[in-house]
Image (cartoon, rainbow, N blue to C red; front, side):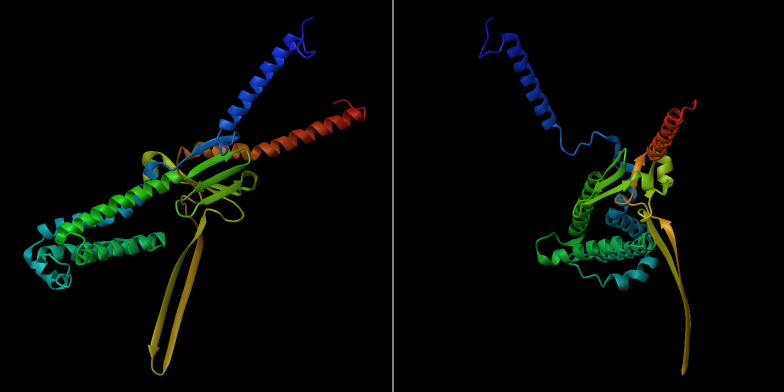
Length: 312
């Protein structure tokens, strides 16, 4: 029988085919991205609607400027005169008295909203952002590299608002949430990257927070609560009273803090669609190990009875 190096042709062809298919299989597996986990049961990202608060917060410099224009041009002259002396303290080049009034109301609105957001969110980042935008827009014309007058201030505010909205959207898209059979993964961030993994069997509670917009648009925040208190924050209130008079003085104060749910993109499944279904999935995965152990224990018990000659 004809052979090649002692190997029959049919056997050689089969080996060549097997080698070919093996190489193709290896190439196919190498083509799969390494970050893909074949055990993923669910994957999601924050919904666009869930970031409407962020979009609104960082577009506030432009909104406040538009509102200020509307106020000044609909306000009686007698009311304008009350604020005119304060408005003249704004000395950016090329501004009329009306422009200065607009900027004064713009600053008042930004400070008010920044303080309100700071109290509600316990963070004054928004207020700092508003003040920086306002100051830079008024100082920039002095450099000679930007348009003078109200046109330059409006153009700068529009430019910064567009950039802020783009950065917020990139920040939203950077977050990815995954659920495997063992853990909940949270990954995201732009400057600093956050990667968190919560073991499903160690969950103490699963909380769903649905704000007003969430009930309208159908999204919610799912907070996996563990013993390390991931997803939780503290809300504190401080009160005090004092009486001072020479030569004596007295003061009384108190601090009260409670654990509260503070969903954020980096500590929860933030703004996901159908959070109730995701919660059911997690609960199902969390009970599987217990069910497996129960069935294993029952199997061992039946085996012991059989070995002992008992009928099962």
